[in-house]
Image (cartoon, rainbow, N blue to C red):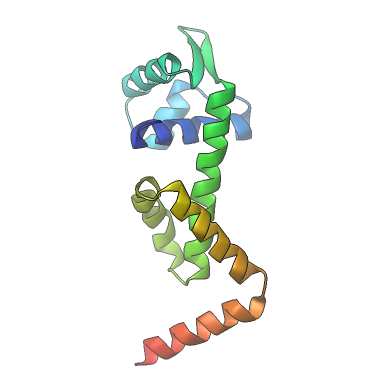
Length: 140
């Protein structure tokens, strides 16, 4: 099981590969606001734990295991963003809130949040009712 730090790297690598077709150490360092040397160390660890294949000076690519984990981590992040949006969290807080909670929830909790997101998305009236409750609460 990857650590939260490993998850951040796998998620970022997955997103870069999906969007650009590749992920460079410098791109990862910039996205995660860390030094390239930190990225290199983590890439070596991820290689050792078989999340990616790394060849010095040649780059790296995610393994099947790494792709699967990356896909699930991106799904988790996007689901939590969607959930916070549905429940009315202010847009400027969503990214930081997701970053703060995503590593602290079990996959069982993520699945239940997914059920709740589906419940609200299946019927616009439910979302409207929730907004009405929030507006009434704010007036008190």
